[in-house]
Length: 98
Image (tube, rainbow, N blue to C red; front, side, top):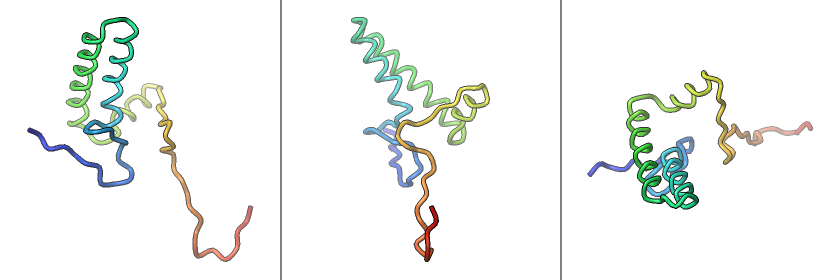
């Protein structure tokens, strides 16, 4: 049994149970399309295989490699969960400007 990596930092990808969100997407897409087409077992299995292949691809490369590769090709991915940089107000500032 392989150990499961638990995120310890804020900037790690969001996770659901033991999968990160990018690993869970092919499984969920296979499940949804399988329900629509009536081939749940086949498409869910295909989603698991795609997730396994993606995990092998991702483990041998640095974090964010696929996002950089897709951006280089011309596809820009944006997280819908507000993963953009956020700023906070400087607590040592005496006055604020609009």
